Image (tube, rainbow, N blue to C red):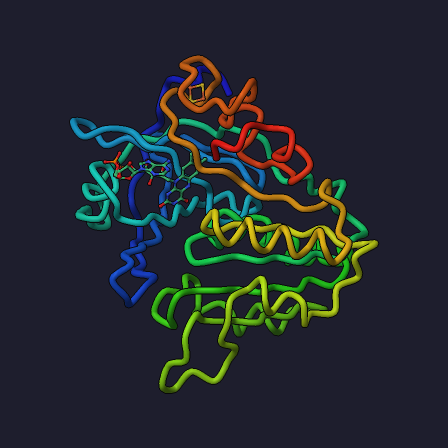
Length: 277
Ligand SMILES: Cc1cc2nc3c(=O)[nH]c(=O)nc-3n(C[C@H](O)[C@H](O)[C@H](O)COP(=O)(O)OP(=O)(O)OC[C@H]3O[C@@H](n4cnc5c(N)ncnc54)[C@H](O)[C@@H]3O)c2cc1C
Ligand code: FES
């Protein structure tokens, strides 16, 4: 990366409405204009700005192996995200990055992978999944078990892709919602309860979690109880950020800056940090 403060212009080439509930999440497909490009690895994020509105950090949601475009999945919560949600295909935004550390894809080779995601938490894990699903990479990883949770059936993101994911060699996808719903024939219940029923090879599994803090707390507690070492339970944090490059001090937890030391942390690392996240 040359100048981390210098954004590149990108065009919204497609906008996909993900959720059909009050939780408004859209996936934005972006192509850099003026010959720009951005290589990244799973776990990293960008700062996206809309001139006259502001800038905010978002994790990559697309495959790092796709060099044609990047995708970001974004929930409407405030100033920047509200403005973004009103933009249509063809609009231009500015992007700088990539920032942050990555999931340890090399260290994870040879292990089974357990992915537990709640709602929008699946977004920053999708680059990792698509990276491992790639035919050049699939044989490097063991079974991939996914437990995908949402409040209700309308809250899942990327649901259109789940059937394709289920067809991938040694890959399983279990979906669960909080309460029973008419027409829902998959699981009902919270992920920390369902995880106890899964057949997990605790000696040789990396668990990757992302979702609401309460979900991370209960699920990681259960995984530790089941015997997965804290070093092999990974998550990604979403602290408030400004610079993205370790200069402004906005994102620190103790002596760690989430923007450069994270956003990916193991439970072993988090257990050594003040509980501010
Ligand atoms: C590394 C990283 C990756 C992220 N990835 C994604 C992603 O993939 N998709 C996505 O939708 N969001 C993601 N976020 C969160 C996203 O950055 C915030 O939702 C965004 O900054 C809100 O901007 P806004 O101007 O719309 O909201 P604001 O107008 O700034 O705030 C609206 C409301 O959201 C709260 N808020 C703002 N930022 C945060 C935050 N970081 N954590 C908790 N509450 C916050 C405010 O307190 C306020 O209540 C990520 C954050 C980080 C740090
Ligand atoms: S966002 Fe500025 S130090 Fe992390």
